[in-house]
Image (cartoon, rainbow, N blue to C red; front, side):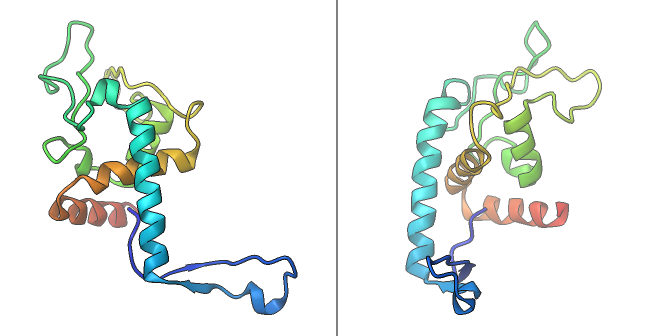
Length: 151
């Protein structure tokens, strides 16, 4: 999750002097602006790549907990009614990049395609940032704890 607050960024200049090698503080306004840009990019990428299955409003497909005849589950919601926020960032990133079969237990069948050839890693993080921006604070807090514990 992108955390709004004081962050450090490396600033690289043309002269590359030792003074410019030190991290400089990013202002709160800069952090907020960056987060807004990331959420907007994630919103656009979600609409183009995810909404067809997971819903325009992150609502998922009907009966998403009931297996279909082919053994796959319908696309789950990514809003607070689903289970996306029950998983650490590393798993969400891996599933998005490598598909639903990546790391799945034996016998699990997933219709979730891999987006690693379609989206850059930065794009995937932007989509996840957008999804998380739609969760209530309590869900974001709990998901962050799981992410922190997962390492």
